[in-house]
Length: 317
Ligand code: XMP
Image (cartoon, rainbow, N blue to C red; front, side, top):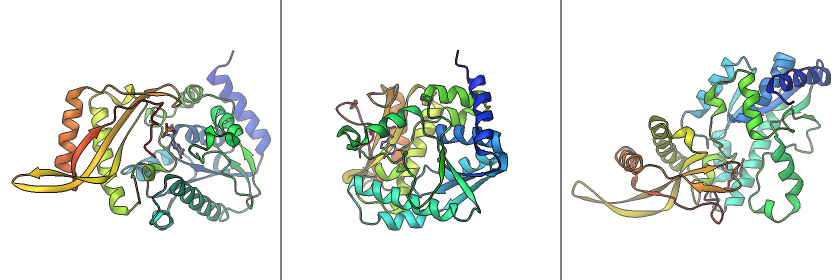
């Protein structure tokens, strides 16, 4: 029978044998998969695992510092790379969702390539690929997978001649969490909602500017912290805020305002393939709407997304 403990034991032994004294480079995202994969490789080869965590300027508020800190706490050999400006320049003026994804994917590869060349004699690329990613990338030629070009898999540029090591590529998401628990990873990592690779860039409809990112980070932080405060965070599969490219009229005191609209999204789901909009309590929605409008300058209206997938998707782009 499959148990997390026996998986951990045999995987670590297998990694030791396979990698030996070689070096491995790995990009971490703060998500469950890459964190669990890195911890396994780290248990096998220690400081010969070189982890890289890139700040693409599209993460949640304070996420870069917090995630970096928790990786250090786990003992990982991790380097934080601030590449915000590089991503913002690559995104400047782009409005098409797929063009934004491509620019982000390309920039990420540039940064990662540059960083891995700073490590002497690295032979392996570690990846947090899980079984459903393998299946999805096999079907990449079919029409359904090109609806949105996820860039988690196959991120290996041809000019980087690294061998690939993917310790989780036979596991489903719930098994990855069980393995993470057996490895002693904290709930802050294991129970984290999924967050897309392109980050807030696909939750800001239209073009990306650092100012819009900052507004959305504030809104998103209030929303996510509110969900946690109300004990709702663990009951939804994924949640986030979307900055809409429209302004609407409001009143503040006796002034007329003409400011931004944000949409809140929360879904329940098993695997993200289908999803239901989360029936969040009205009191929570009322409170969070007030808090966002009162505290985030430039936002005067909050709406809640009541669409399910299909026919809508979880993200708006
Ligand atoms: P959709 O919007 O397709 O999202 O219903 C399903 C799940 O996939 C995530 N998602 C992405 N993840 N790169 C990623 O790494 C992407 O380009 C991307 N687009 C969507 C989304 O957050 C949800 O969990």
